[in-house]
Length: 295
Image 1 (cartoon, rainbow, N blue to C red):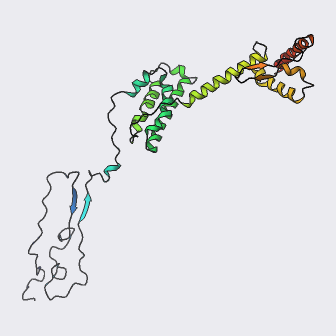
Image 2 (image 1 turned 135 degrees about the vertical axis):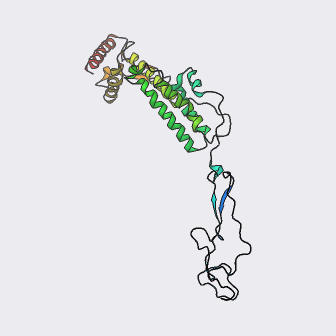
Image 3 (image 1 turned 180 degrees about the vertical axis):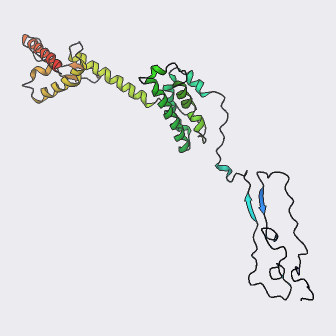
């Protein structure tokens, strides 16, 4: 074997079909391509010996003893291109361009952008399919309410010369809240517009004020008896007249009995058509006046 191979450092069986080296790329990698690295047959890179010994040769001589520690064959490594999207379906669908300006709609609204933000917050959940998108939209609406609350603060007169803050801040946030956050919109369908819950509370408050005024006028015999009498004195008179009717009979004229329509009518005192009835009525009026002054 030494006679056949006088140079012990030479490769006894060189590869008759060497693998050609890849040509350097002249341009950047496309987004749909991948970068492949194959170093299974490249023994001259990474500091490898350019003249391997017969034992480390990948093609040993026939009849030679096998190498107990053969060099493992490495598989090619494939790296994704940096411009390749690993999951194209995860990218949200871009929102189409709007053909109107939402803030202009709020500016031209008759009831103002404060009430408009109430309508948007009440009706926008039906247009969302993702809870995360709805959370972002409601967060923007909450920020708009925070800015508009500045308008009703005691120091707002000092900042009234500024035409941008806080009205325009609130207008922009409230008008673009749904358009900017709704990345997964619901299918187009007819949806009725509901009034915000604030309107129901406002109507109940007006109804309560109307009934309170009716009780005040009825208890005061067509003159204003005062809110304190209606909320404090009259309920106590009702309790006393119901607990001990014989002792507090003169308080019967103070008790109110609302009818089915909500209108309050006073209970006529016993014997009101005679002198005894008029005396009791005058006594009750004096008691009411004294009680109102004490309260």
